[in-house]
Length: 244
Image 1: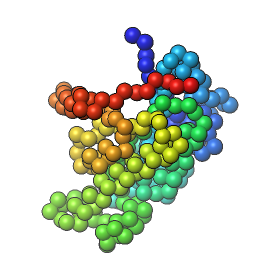
Image 2: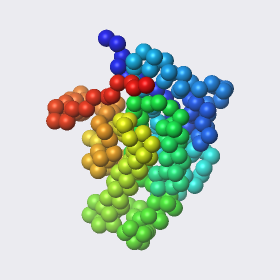
Image 3: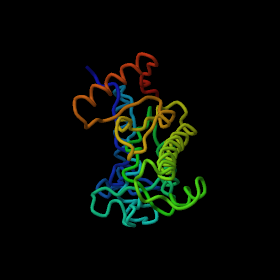
């Protein structure tokens, strides 16, 4: 069976771009080459549709070089000080950076789709941007104790969920404004996971279809496969063939 589509890296968790970017950090190993463009051309020459991969929130380069964009833990430390992957808050100016990056990719390349990976909260964020939004929308300081009997903690969690859904729609709108015909997807494997990720059905509206890479046990895999199969039967969507 011939491949019908391919997911090709445009931007990775570590923040590297695989084409000469004027917005982000180009992988120094590619020199002046446009690896993304080369692979897209090869795929299209063989009637293979291309989905560009873009890592959202997980961007180590942006995290290390822009401290004000970092997700901050309740203890005041950056969320990724001892991790390989830096994580950026979607309430910070990182959102403008990510949008500009997506717009650049859409302007530069002929694509059939974009896959936004990692659209979730890696941790509960206490940065100044989250504090400001909470103060404006709810009032007062961010609660520091996880207490589901505390209305303020519940309000904070509901804001986290709403902010994430809004960010997903914000990124999807950036793509659709330039390339309305491409498919857009945000990683959906977090839907059956716990509250910390902040993923709810509100994020569904930002997707043309749902996809995800699953790391749970057999029960999780069975549940997700059944859910996706039911969704496909009720609203089938097929990736468009390459159009040149």
